[in-house]
Amino acid sequence: MVPEIRLKEYPSTREYRDHDPIDGEAIKVVSGDAVIINGEKHYLASVYAPQIARPRCMDEVGKGLMAAGRLRLLLKGPIMVRPAISLDLKRIPAVHLSSNNEDVGFRLVKEGLAVYSGRAANSEENLTYWCRSS
Image 1: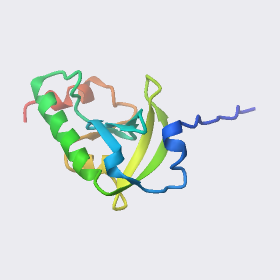
Image 2: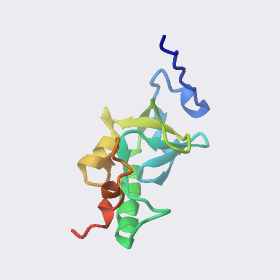
Image 3: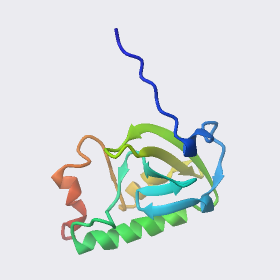
């Protein structure tokens, strides 16, 4: 018998289950892959951006600031918030944010400001990706 899996509802995303858009100005950007919605921190689902708070090199800081700045620009106007199934190791919920029918996390990847996360997201290769010389 397979146990039933129940997804926890998070207060800041519960009200957006019907895909009602919110004003992007209400979303605070913490980094290139983290935001605060209604006082609760969320990570962008499926992407990993350069770190600002704990960078591995100075290049990562600069790229992280670029990713965060671009994310701020992408979050102008009405934003669709869709909770993701995943939580990070600190149990912080992930969300999909979209503007003009495009996932902003995937847009950051297309622009080279983030990489897709997944099984290898915390691999040494991804963790040092931003510190390689161009």
